[in-house]
Length: 264
Length: 182
Image (cartoon, rainbow over all chains, first blue to last red; front, side, top):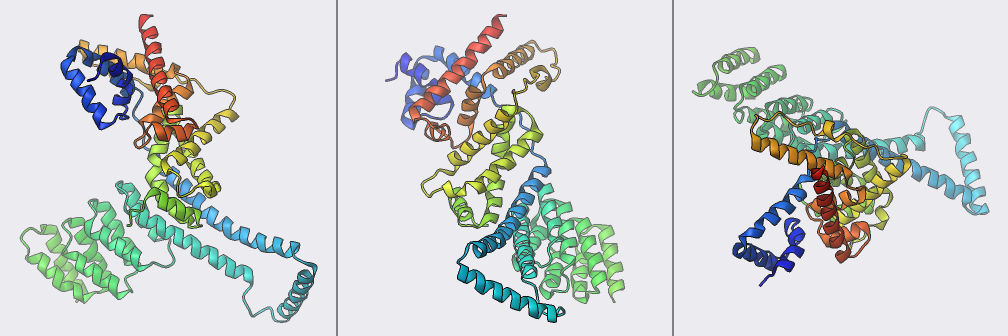
């Protein structure tokens, strides 16, 4: 059975969540039997809770700063490896140094003779850095697409346009966004991003399949516009289904009819 | 997306998989920002401090081991980042509490007025609380940081961490009561 001294001693632990289940029960039992002390709990809670205040949301600049730093680190890592190689070369044995010097002179000679052929090692390194940057950017897209904030998800879709190559995972993530995201603007952006890869048959099929999954007139119209641009005959069937559906918005129905005419 | 533990992600970062840091950043940025914001109230500075934390995470990733507790480890770094920043600045700027905690006009309800006054007084008391005491309370309010982990962050025993939390809260109460008497 807890007494007042024990009660007083573990009050802060109780409020701060540092008490064991057993002690919580004992303290609550003590309070039940001595309700006059509940004021002391209130008092500690007042001080405990009072220190927490409203915290603003960090701005998008923080994310941009972080991911830029992360990219820079990657590039630095690659640069460092070149320096390390040079350092190793300079600090290597005399035998090695002479050997490398001869090799460099020979390479230099042949390079001088035929400037128009061959790829410089620096170029291949730049390629490597580009690859790494692409990989970080892809990771950024996938991470941001999972964020609860619609702005972050929009940022993710915009990042896709900066990618030189998209992976299947990114395409799948974009379709997941297009078909399931709660925010219309994010879904519209996903259409825009996917339209850049419409030459991939799977993307085309996915876009057509998405027409009937959409409920927002804005998204339906955006998809119809895209299908007209792509002159995608396969989409007509989906347009006709939408026209037949009772729930479809009148403007959308009209748009679908116009789109069918424009595709044929 | 795989929900790997913080520790597993950090070990990936340690092995050179730097892009994994993005996932840890997404998990911790708000908590770190909140911690810094409550300490210094300067949102823009806090964003820089959060970034500095992750720069240090990369710099000191070799010190992270499988036995480390990621939460304590990162908050230990955060704490160092914070103090290093203010060590460089000559003096911590005193913030104008009245300005920061501008209260909305109450509807002349006496009780609400009274509550507002109490809160104002509490904010004033908090602003007068020394940084190390404020810090220990803020750390103990972070989900997952119990006395044991706080001890790891501030380099002391679990018992010592507990005592410090108790003292800090008592000091806050004393400052508050002194202000109330004035």
